[in-house]
Image (cartoon, rainbow, N blue to C red):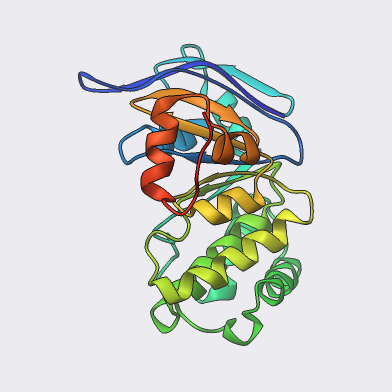
Length: 250
C-alpha cells in the first residue's frame, strides 16, 4: 500500500503541492489527471524522492518516512520500493536495449551477469522487443524506447510502478503500442500510478481516478464516478474540454 499525508512542495515562492493525501492499495491502478502545472509529475517524483517534499509523510509497503527527518538510508529504502517510467525514456544511449535493462539488476540488485541477461531477455520478450535486444536507443522508435523503459522498470520487481505521462513524447501512431504493454502489465495485478492525458485509457484501465489542479486534489473516485458524474465543477470543466464527446450529469 502507498500512503501520503500532507505532502507539500515549493519551488522558490511557488507552491506546487499543497498538502496532498493519497492512498493506493496493493494491486490498484490509479490514474492522476489534471491540467499542465497542476502538480501531477511533482507528486510522482516526490513518491520516490526524485524531488524531496518540504514536509509530509510517505509510506510504501513497510517503509515510512517523514520528509523533514528522512535520512539517506530512509530514502534509499523507499526508492527500492518503486520504479519509474519517464516520459522522455531516460535510456543509456551507449547501451543496448538488453544492457539498459540489465544495468539496475547488476548495479542495484547485485545479480550475476548471466542471471541479469536472462531476466532482461525475458522482459524484452514480454514487451515484444526480443528481436531488438542488441539495438541501441538511437536505432529504436520512440514507442520501442518506451517499451524498453517499461521492461527496465519491471526488472527490479518493484512494489509499485510510477508512470510519468508515458506517451506524451510519442507520435500519435506509436501511443497504442505503449498503452497495450501497460494494459498487459495491469492484468497481472501490479500496483501502478499513472500520470496521463490519455482520457479513454485512464477510464478503461484504472481502479481509481485522482483529479488535481493548482497543487490540490480536487476530486477522486472510480472512473465511472469521475467521468460520468463528477461532483466538482472544475473536474467537469476539465473533462468537458478533454473529452467533449461525453456528457456529464452533475
